[in-house]
Image (cartoon, rainbow, N blue to C red; front, top):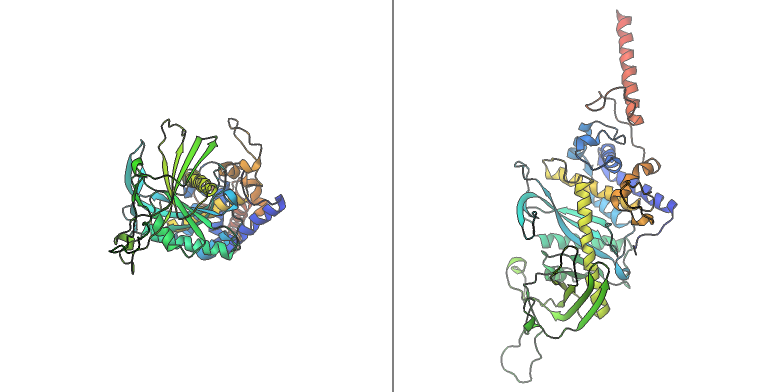
Length: 479
């Protein structure tokens, strides 16, 4: 089941048109050029290869130089755009809860030696267990997840990580702002269950849970299989001398001999992974030390207790011997139903990988060779709004499939790439008419007198011809 906003065709068309209008209002400098660039990405045939080639799309009414000028010198009110995205209908995860997935994707720039604020990005090379460190710009994304297997997510925010930034601290501040906007938009009420924050390995999950403890959120994510957790301290015996113990016994994830009887053991039959067994141990916490993010912590270091979940599936696609996945959640006292919900929502975090692949391979997020990181930020937000328009056009698009592709019986099962194929048919009914560009000489790739361009281009060519005729008549009259 796909849980999305259920509206009629007229309502969905109105939502898409209203978002396009509000997006245009967020563009305070070179607004029409940025709007045309976004429409060109939406209506282009095939993957985006470069900014210059987007100027050949009929919906792009300017030359190739206008696109680069808009990205380098345009202005987007990012705060206003973030509020607009938060007010859109949000998908719901299993159980009707809001689930926010967080992850980092890299814009690799290994050949841009003069581009500032690059970092060494951890990327996986071909082959299992291989990795490389390549210079680039890492971006932290926050997206609302759906339930069930899907390639759709609702991306709500993007922040570029700088050389001096702590990824966990930036993510915590980013999540705090996103959750605040979601609550202000009315998507969460005090009587609703807590919002789930889903993260993969690489995040300091106890730190996230501690920093966001004042918000109605619950953190769940993957932890390394070599981690060592601690049990709660045993009750103090009356009259026992010495200081009260702060930690209990050791729980080593890689050593089954250190495990105690789990509080819950559940089994679920899945269509993709076979039989999935989940074991949950309650009230386990890591040992915190005064280093890294806890170096400047005032007072005694806290105990961040949670639930450790061991997920073992029968098989994986292409892997006959799957290893168990270890999860940690900030929830304590979880029931067996909640344990199953937590690991199922965690699996939906991998839908973000489909979104990143769409950004890079189809929408051309990392294709432009931009020098300034501020220009990269503008292009990133432009791609994010393009993806949002595809999501809003999901119930409106028709299936323009290739001959070798399987037909889709339900429109809502269309992938973002297949929705994009039919967006040109919706463009004329949803677009906001922007001001016609100023007359200029036809640029490269736009020969004068061509008949396959946008009406605004033909209008400019006509004005140029009329001006030339007027000047010729004036010369003849003056002798």
